Image (cartoon, rainbow, N blue to C red; front, top):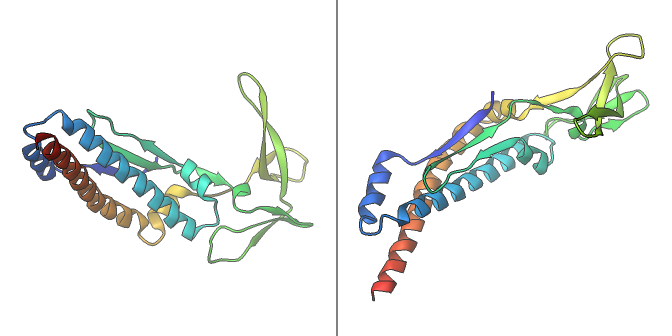
Length: 197
């Protein structure tokens, strides 16, 4: 199950914007879409930056593990889901050594080693073609097969437990949304004022 950040306008703010736009209600959908979309994208960047400070993972890999459920002109809410699937260990700077594989999870920690692990490519069979996937693997017993891929933590776990990231991002998101709505509202009212002049 994914960990979630919700970008949603509270009723009091919504009523205020309705009052300010009562003469031009058609602008409401555009205003809400732009404010919520900008807020959600800023919050996604905040999540990526905060998690990147905690673990040794590329920002692209972090961003790829966050699903953005976008708003629309008629649906005035958005959602950021941080996936709880565990990340392959290969993504954590895994390096082959003579005795196994070394890697680093926490930015503040040192490299760790897994004895007898190895880095290799394994085929992934899809519907149309066979692709290859690089990973860190280890044999499950003394025999050559079977082997299993080794995984690191899930981003959802890091997001929920490292330094109150989730609470801080949700709080900042709520404040940011109000500011972005006010900025969009001011822009629309100014445009209206100029066209009436």
